Length: 443
Image (cartoon, rainbow, N blue to C red):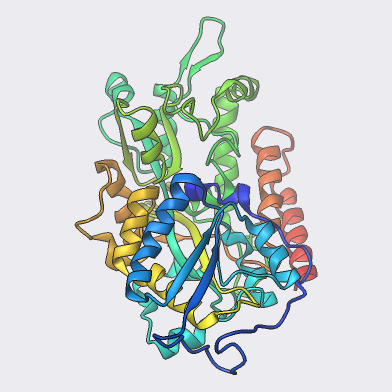
């Protein structure tokens, strides 16, 4: 995730219900879960993912462990297959047996349309213990009670900070509240002689790197939906707190100055990343950043911590946004029974999860794997393991139309925070109406 954090980039918004072909193949015509092939039946499973090169090979290595347990099942490991291609194959009746998606935003469409098959029968039959997966992770791999996917590794978001800059500024510990965070950001920001930003303590601009509405909203206690399934962006105090905080930070630093600074900042997924090159002192980012730093700037003196939370509820410290990769059986899969065996192996067994976590720099999605002695990650990675197992994970809810509601909030967040409007209440009410209308069309 860039590796998995590219989730949002690779997401393919499916805007109309899928026309689906029926299942065929081993056990697929039965009303219940498909039976696994016998040990004498030769089966070839086709697995699609968006992985490529080193990562695709690593996935293949993990699946080799499954092949050793089931020598009658051969795996055709096909990479560079994003959500658009997966969707097209389902529509065209040429779906793979197993599909790995980087987009949790599309789970509502995959489950709701039947594009991914319901796994509940398999889970019940094989007594899979879902409690070993955190609730937020279970939530982003199911929709309205229908589980059509299993999680395969997770992203968890926290604070990255430059230790050398902290020491120079006299900051002795990472901030825990937004007021502390703002004060530290001010101390850490450096300006050039012409008044332009030389080093940003933190870039509050919405959409800069992982400074997204999904990642930040949990830190303010902002909720997406109310108890009736309607948008809560106009009624949840957390949204007002978040947008007002962002606006105050952008105003203090200078909207135009921030625009010029971000325009010159290096690409997020490159060795020129502004945090990695010392142009930004603090960022919000996922655990995968540790792998990038190790590969691109191994000498960087940095540390990680939970991201700060709103002052009105400091007990929320330790809250973190999570997302991840999902894996399912597409409608039309020829070998559904064997496909489930592979999914069960990859998503619930410690060995393959740790193997993939080590390769990709992501958090293993089963809590059993969090304490594995075989996890080989830098010390800064521990923060994300603790956050994942800490009981305070949050995720944006699945919807019938993918991430359309996120885009609505992204647009208003940037407009308000950068001073494009002063009508916070009216803007949030308008956003809520847009989200509800869009969701109603997607039902």
